[in-house]
Image (cartoon, rainbow, N blue to C red):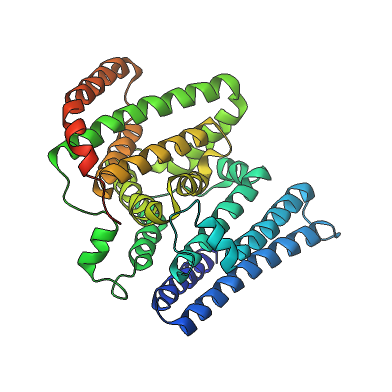
Length: 350
């Protein structure tokens, strides 16, 4: 049942994205797309209000306070997302975000990311989601992970108007999927090593200052990804997440919603880390990937993300961390003259 409802929701979101793209230059279709987006907001708000109401009745669950928090969070999220449909508010947001306030595609992107961020954050603040994943989450296999990540890829391509506003070649260009220069590849590998060192430090901080939460995060990750601790599983984690997430977040969203907001949404998607040092690390790494995208291309961020996920999956021994960091530092030093020459001219027009 959960799989079916998830599929229906994914198809409904895809339909809204396609409708918004058809609405570019067609005022009536654009108005219809915004109306459908408003329905999404209303449903999330209504769901939140119903959850909060049920929690106050004798039929509510035992964890009533958590249900009230989730319900309130959903209701606030739906209302906040609906505000993004107001033209005047979008015009103000356009001062901080690189959006076109008159574009139905950009309006729908704002609404969907606000709904995603708010609902995920509400579940985390209620202290419910991470605990559920740690104790009763369903272990993921390679096909499960691909099915989980694939909607990001599909949403990215249709979000930039594949076969509607742009042909395939134009969509690839808009998403930043280009042939990388040789130094892009070396840079991606070097940055992946730095990312690994940084995330390892964040994990150590979590174990030092929030040991109970760190234990819960590790339990959730072991339960979710424990069956992927083999070559096929590691390759799936590296490629599926690295490709699909980068094409959506850095390829499609960063040029329109900016690095900061896109990074917040990206961190919220990684629910397996809860509200922990690991989530803060994901947020920082997302910002770094955003700048990497801005000054190179999405292909480079994909290579970096895939390499980083592979390092995490393999789990480099601590004894190798020092030499690995030395190699990464050497790569960066070698790249400095190349970066000085090329980075100023490599920013894409998107």
